[in-house]
Image 1 (spheres, rainbow, N blue to C red):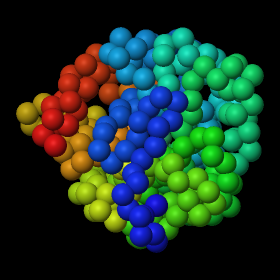
Image 2 (image 1 turned 90 degrees about the vertical axis):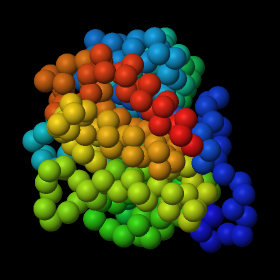
Image 3 (image 1 turned 135 degrees about the horizontal axis):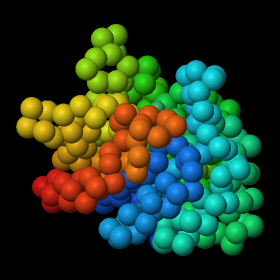
Length: 281
Ligand code: PEP
C-alpha cells in the first residue's frame, strides 16, 4: 500500500463503476444498522433523490454488550441488496465480523444477479484481527474499508492494512474514526482528522473519515451547527476521500447509535456543505 514499496504513484481503484482514489471524494451516508425495510427504503430513496450512489448499511454489528441488538445478519441481505439495486446504489459499505460473512454476502449477491456492490468494512474492534484480515485479503472481489484501531498507534493500524495487501487485496480505504481517550468527553472519541494528510503522505490509500463514530452525538455549537457537521468539514478540508456518516429517518427508533444519526431533512445541507469544503481543495 505504498509503505513498503517503491511505486507510490498508483493510487486508488474503480469498483462497480465508482472511482476511489486519493484525489476524489465519495460520500457513504446511511444506516448504522439495518432495522426495518421502511427505513432502508426511505434512506435509499433520499440518496437517489440527491444523486448519491453509495451508502452504509450495517447487517453484522459488533456490540460491546452481548445483550444489545447484534444486527439482522444474513437474513436482511436479500432485501437490502434488492432495494439498493432499485435505487441505483452501486456500493454499500458493510461491516463484517467473521470471514464466513464474505461468503454469505457473495452468495446472496450472486443469487440476485449482483444488483449492487459491497465494500467490506473492518471495524475498529477488529483492526488487529489478523485472521479476519488475511481472509479478507485473500479475496479480490470486494474492496475493503479498514477502520483505524481506536486504542493502538497509527503505525499499527497501517500495518493492519498491509495484512490485506500482503494477502493480495490492495483495494483498501483507510478510515479515521477517532481515538479513545481517558477523558472520553465531550465527544465519544477524540477526533483525529488532522491525520488525513499524514496517512495520504505515508501510503497510497484513499482516506475516509467517520464523523459519526468520532463525535458520537448530536451536540451543537453555540452557532447551532452540529458537531458531526463540524467534524465532517474538518475531515473534508483536510483532504478526506470518503465520508462514512450515519443518517436515520427516525433516530429515536434506531437500534444502534441513534443519538449520533443525522436526520433525513439534514441530508441536502450536509451534502452541500461537503461540496463547499471539497471545493477548497
Ligand atoms: C460502524 O461504522 O458501524 C462502527 C461500528 O464503527 P467503528 O468500528 O468505528 O466503531
